[in-house]
Image (cartoon, rainbow, N blue to C red):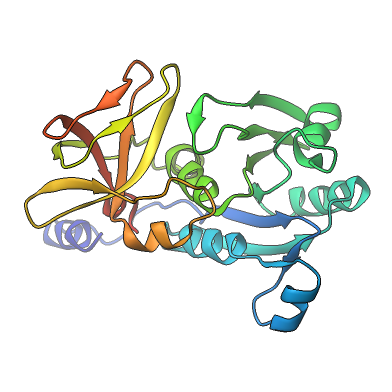
Length: 252
């Protein structure tokens, strides 16, 4: 950081040891995906969607100081996925994929890691992001993020950020949290942790986006952070203290 540089110079330090930047490959899976810039008519005629996850995740990775490698978007075919993972595992230090992590017939990421790689964790009791898959492919760490953009965003912050920091040599860092007063009422299912898109209003109270759908990308631009609701909590009333995690704590 600039302040660290100033301290080094002020104390006469001219040379320091550093780690090589972590190489992180970003992959999207799904028959429905179109790259940005594709013809809009194709989107309307063929029931396609633009792949927003890959550019979003690449931007996040680069903001964190890592080298981002665009591995492209591939169809939901096991053979293609196997070939892409084999290729990527020889070129990058970490693979982050989005899509194909659930349990549907065409969700091959988790199944392939489980059968031919090493699946360490799958289906975590959080919202959004339950089908998150964590494992290894040819000894290369792989994060299988959900395909929904909000879930992919949240899981990259909560799970990928501290793990990548550890792999990069800067140690494990939990996100900055502080208590703020709730400006809303909300009921919650017990037994799972929830991350709700939120921002701080002019009164210093937390307000949440009106829709919790994991496809509402606009909520990510609207919000300035996440509220963390723990497993035992069943409701939040106006005036309660809630845990707020600002995006600025993730360098976003």
